[in-house]
Amino acid sequence: MSIGSPLSSIIANLILCDLEARALKSFDIPLLFYLQYIDIATAIPRDKTQEILNIFNLFHFRLQFTIQVERNELNFFYLKIIKKQHKRV
Picture 1: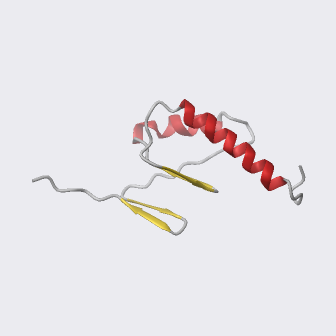
Picture 2: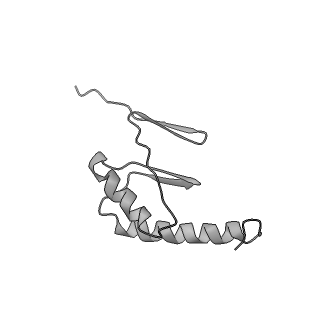
Picture 3: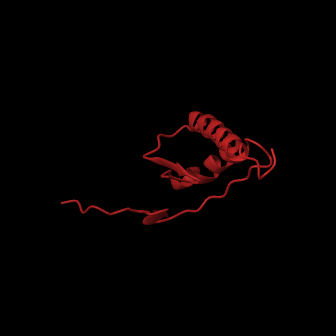
């Protein structure tokens, strides 16, 4: 498909939906949340980040994903997710 074709975005979306479905089935950990809209936002244990990234990147050699690790807050479009520590009494 050429880039300017009206079908390009539809086909790209179908391919990424297939990739997501396959990747999510292969995760061995439960996800607290998974948000996708161009970018993907999720919460995973730090020791699993490379494993998850590898799962996405093994789908096709031309599709290469990157990962951005946030500590206490995550900006996802117009949404800000803040991790708060609760004090135990």
